[in-house]
Length: 93
Image (cartoon, rainbow, N blue to C red; front, side, top):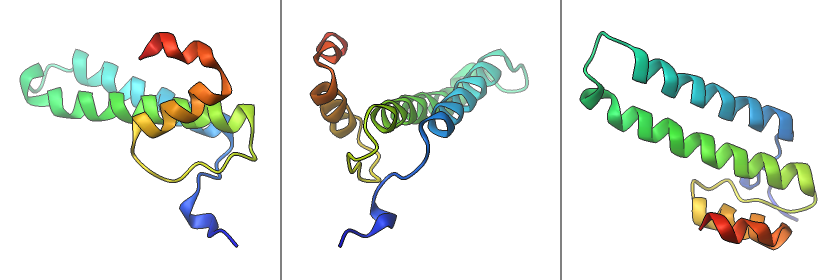
């Protein structure tokens, strides 16, 4: 039996909402005036990666909840699953 804690179980819309929140965070970091953009670049990149990850996980869950997606922070892994679902993802690589 698979350990449910090892796999993504969230609903697609919640993953999409989480990605949207990451994008809002990016926008606020870019437009914020308190700290120079150079000092915020690592957080902007972090939230961009998180948004991409959540969008891919949401897409996979939306298309087929039966696919077991491991809870990993690995865009290549998620991309491979998405590509197996829809080969038009090849244009994104």
